[in-house]
Length: 565
Image (tube, rainbow, N blue to C red; front, side, top):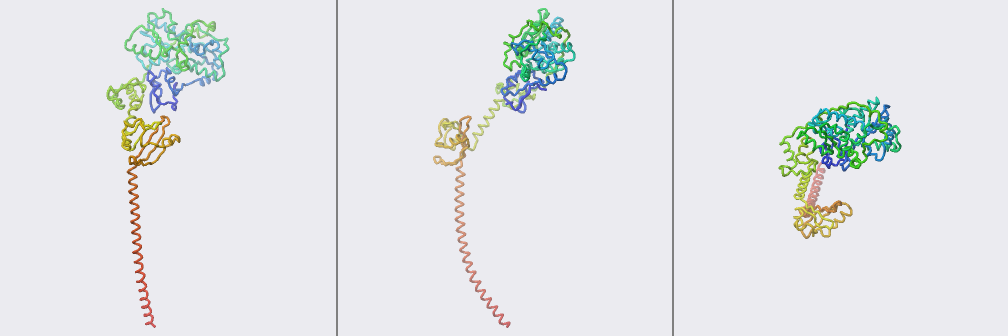
């Protein structure tokens, strides 16, 4: 289940998360930026930098509530950086608050940290490894497994303090469940990774726990008389950038050179150098977050300074240490195994890279602006990401802008209609070639000036005041043209747009057609009148002839009748 989820409706395709992610563990598809879980190390940068708050963190406190309700005892392992989150409160008060949530026991992860330091010291004393990278930071482990597999051999085969503490508690208290709370996102991934140890059921963030307490109405006030401490208080310094080294005595390093690095950029620079130079005899304390765990994602997201947080850390004993937890006195080994988890991307050919670059107008190296607006440091890196299915070819902002400008320019230049832009004082901002032709003006001479043909134009005020499109047909006697105008007011830019169609030819044809119609009607009427006269004359003649015929026939009939008689 994803730890960093995306609200797709909020993602605005700004590419900021891609720019902020040093490992480029974000893919852009279907106009949304999704985390690539196989490459992400859960540093939290994408969550913090998103201007639309489109990144959402998974919260398992509901599952933890169900775990507590299941009936088995649930113990909490509390990261030592709690002192910077619940500032000014004692561990005994924190212990009571967590027990009010339903936890059977509350202990500090520093117990596991002390056990891990002993494992590191043993590795160095026995010279088992050429170089050693401490594995207390799950994000560092994830970075090595997913991006620097060549360095897996340097990872100390030792569990993290969280897993070590969980194992100690399970061996001490029997059939229990274990939950961790801290400032880290990668602990959530570690809790579900079987290679990490499988001793922790869920990992919560300090922020999640605080909201849970608030929902339950639990305040950190009264102290827990049964609070249990640690045997080695110096292990509480683990959240500092050099916290691990402070738990090791000089003789523990046994000839190794201890160095410490914190921050994503610092870790990447060191790991790149380790790949190239292959030094020996190093013990490396690496923390992915600047300031160590005190600068963890949850701390940064809530505006808490890691440097100021260090003021609250102390390696001195506290009152709870007078009665240390049972798990603090137990000794056992804490092995850890690792594996390469780097996605297998095919190495793109130079021909394929050039083909992608040419699709976005990069035909020569000079065309490659390397502006990083797409999120990638160079155009070449972006092309490789496209070939790997991590990026969309349309992400190049300069290319899209140039294409849009070219299309706009083409439309304006070749439009059969005049297009003019005016400011609120009705001065010309711009006009296209067709407008120059219709109004008989020059663009260079018209910019910033009013256009005589628009003097007294009332459509501007009507379009602005009524927020409507004003359409009208006018005869421009001074230039001998008839035009149809559509005037629009763009409120956001306080600009008027006028679209003008020259209908002089159409009007002339209409007039000619009207004259033809009128002439045809007159001609038809004359023909009708003449035909009527002819018809009347014919009818008159036909009438006389019929009468004479009738008389003749009657006479013949009478004659015939008489003869019969």
